[in-house]
Image (cartoon, rainbow, N blue to C red; front, side, top):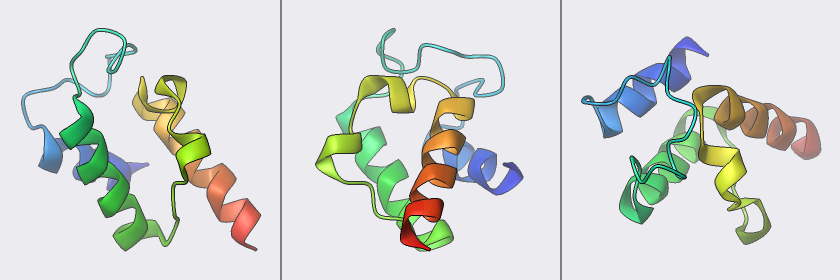
Length: 77
């Protein structure tokens, strides 16, 4: 989770990822941010986010993104 927080802060250092729970719903992250995050997730965790996983619920909070990463890692094993 610490590595994920580093990634997120690298993309948007101005956002309080630890406490925000509506990153997409409140328009805090835009599509460019999400694309950057997806690219970093692939680089750091070796997971590929598919179109079917591009649900706002998967990117609304650090916990949701972490759950997505864990789910994708399990699928790849």
